[in-house]
Image (cartoon, rainbow, N blue to C red):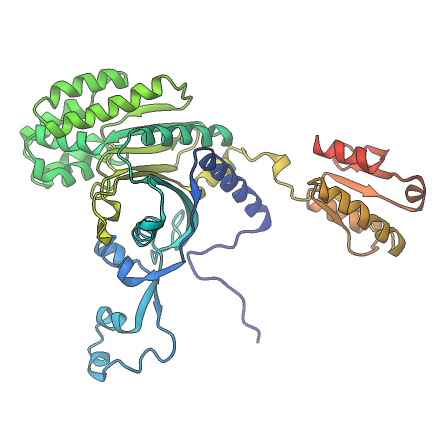
Length: 454
């Protein structure tokens, strides 16, 4: 009995129809990246486990897909270690490589490994799949794509401004209405100082980062569970409830954090970014959100997150500033800033809102009907002319019934069909049928090219 084909849980096939839409998103994002001078980079699907392990915490290490060594990988494992059934120790003996968990650690490895060859600031974008041995569920997969853009080797806040401009341009082109939330790690550190718990920074920010999901009362309860006293929790309330414009919030923060050098530094960084944006006519709303935290062990300065306004979904883009990306590989003080566009969530938003342009969803623009050997030989030269003009063209591969050939064009959504029989060959024309309106006109190939390119 034949085995029924399947794919691993947590992975997906992408049909041609879906790939056309995904490529539209990728191409749009890439075109904006290139506008700002970012260069493409790809790293291997697999990295040495020594590169990956210990970079994502204990939970992250458990989610790494590990690759068995080639050949008889069990041959050199002592019998006593096999009998111990210690999977962690055993894995170290039989596996030296793993699938990449994200694009950031491979990027850091690349920068350190090739530092003598790179020009700094180094600006790169990377659109590749990553793998995580997570439990598959709705919206969470074991294989998915990340679209990262980063610049390293510069402390300039112009890069933060540039990334916000790129977010604005990407979502303008995709026609998604978004809000960009921004905060600063230094401001969060200042807040922890102001309420008397600088050593509880991570606990405080992990709690307030859940504000949207669990509400203020539950955030306060979690803070108390973490050992934050009632007086400090009360001090935090007016900070979390700051109202007004970005400028007004920063003004209030200057008073609240007046005794925190770190906090004031974060306020100045945010002020500088907002000042630049005021002169750039950004269409996207950029809002200071003091509850935004995003992976505090990683970020050191500005942090941002992008939310779609017309669909209930999590963040569709996020990132921030990090002061020591490459330090994990021995290259200290290499500051950088970057963002990651969530292609899968962006796809879901565009699908729900029917934002994919129909004229970009068809790969073939014109199909030539096949009437027989003489006609197909003649049509091949016409196809060459059309393709040379950049028009996606097909010739049906056999002289099948007209109904079958038209059905093929209809199912593929091909907008035009060309009919070239004996009469058309003699007159040097082709009969062009518009599959939407049904209108049929006789045109020279040059006129067809002009019409389709227009």
